Image (cartoon, rainbow, N blue to C red; front, side):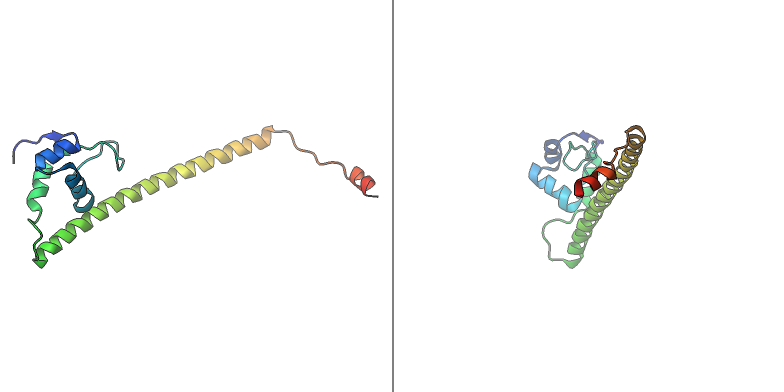
Length: 134
């Protein structure tokens, strides 16, 4: 392994691995290729460290072997990738719930302030209603 370089795009990552952009994107989605998204969003800009990619690649099984141990390792990597994505989604959900609670508190406070400041709405007197009905 050489020095640790920062790769700043899918194209640079693909060139480093000697594969196409779509292939390395698929590897990230299905096999847990270690890429980082500084913005923290699913489809934002990516960066990767060459040393992490080299290490990840060295742990991958070669080819589509029928060896059950290799398949198990491959399935395990896919499962780990899914767990990582699930944890990221869970974190996003928790963040959204906290924001929702905060907004609900703010809206309740605004509603209470409006109730205190707004003049009361008066109903028509019952005398008129009775006179009109008679």
